[in-house]
Amino acid sequence: MNYIIENATLVNEGITSIASVFVKNGIIEKIIPADGGDGACLISTDKNISNYNVIDATGLLLLPGAIDDHVHFREPGLTHKADIASESRAAVAGGVTSFMEMPNTNPPTLTQQLLQDKFDLAAEKSCANYSFYMGVSNSNMDEVLKTDPKRVCGIKVFMGSSTGNMLVEDGGTLSTLFKEAPCLVAAHCEDDATIKANAADFESGELRVESGVWRVESGEWRVESGEWRVESESFLHPVIRSVEACYKSSSKAVELATKYGGRLHVMHVTTGKELSLFRNDISLKDKRITAEACLNHLWFSDKDYERLGNMIKVNPAIKAETDRLALLNALVGGRIDVVGTDHAPHTLEEKMRPYAIAPSGAPSIQHVLPCMIELVNKGFLSITKVAELMSHNPATLFNISRRGFIREGYHADLVLVDPHKPQVISNDGIFSKCGWTPYNGIELHSTVTHTFVNGELVYHDGKVIDGVRGMRLEFNR
Image 1 (cartoon, one colour):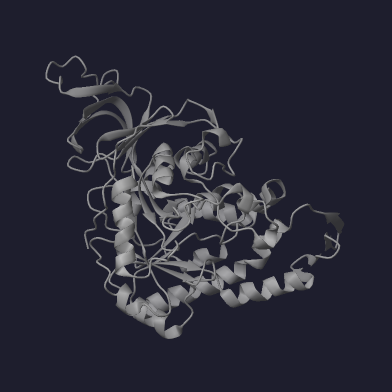
Image 2 (tube, one colour):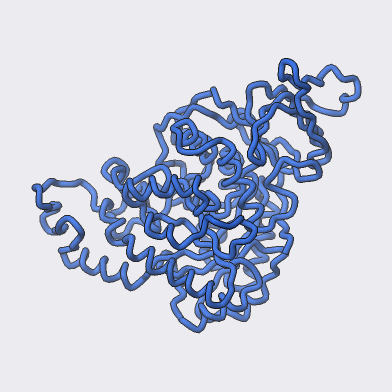
């Protein structure tokens, strides 16, 4: 079906303006700006538009669809938590029209055939556009180097023991990767030795931190000013997976990429200390080293562990409020280039286990765009910066073909948002198979009303429209 999105407030390429957008055969056919005067761009009375379905978007924001560079959709092998069909539905409800999925499935994506298998699954099941990262181990470099840069978003390396057997610590493997990788290398950066040492201290009964000692046996947190009891040990997660663990690994990745000229993208940066590793004095197109922040780390801080416990146990850990504010400032200052979600569902049963054995990760994709707009309402950034971080910059950074901008001739991946339609996030309305969200109960001032994927309306007023299938992303490399 063809559409005219009439009289919308376009948020695109640094400006907001009133315009109407014609969508034909999945492509943005033309953009007609408002004709001065009262600021309206009303064309619904035109007799030449009988082949178009007109949507009155007066008062609504029209943004390019968000491109999430960091999701875990759990298929194959972990589909009791999530799958490509369920999580892509959650994505389009959150204004995400394209996603890039991680290799730590079961089996992990460590061969070109396993990578192709995931593309085949997405072609059958995904209502959003898709790509998948090729995974790295200490023994699959031959497979990694076969990756087609025009057809695959990137190569993912876990430089920290976040998941399964995909930790890569071998110096020779890392050197070869940064020297010879045919496309961008995305890195999870946490130093494994630091984490293990901290975890051993925790398990032995005394974990020393800056302000005191956690004594496991008594369940008390002792500090100079006194002591108090806590119900959950999860607030120690950022102490075990510490600032130093993140910085040590991120700086190593940056050092290797600089030495060998590799293209490095550091994922889910969580600390103010790491920001010094990234530049803000050159354009994104000229950067060889870039950084991502994720919604969980922009929204929550260590003060939220008391209320949410394992629900916000993620890797790298959500850290101090000072780190959260530093990340928010870096979005505006240019040291953080994109915002993703690190959407990582687990079942409630799994998350309710004791801290030490509860899995890390949380669902977050379904409300990412309204949450980012809420940060606009709180004064942290502008609405045009949201479009830049979530659409323009991912498209530029990954060299995605004809997406990420509202431009004539581009694929019509578009999102309409009502900035004056409040909502309260509820577990009852979650599309993700896991059925819960740490954002449950949070009030937002805006709501996604329409999502278009390749010109097809796939989400409208709280419902996903069945039958729409996304396309495989292509890359201009």
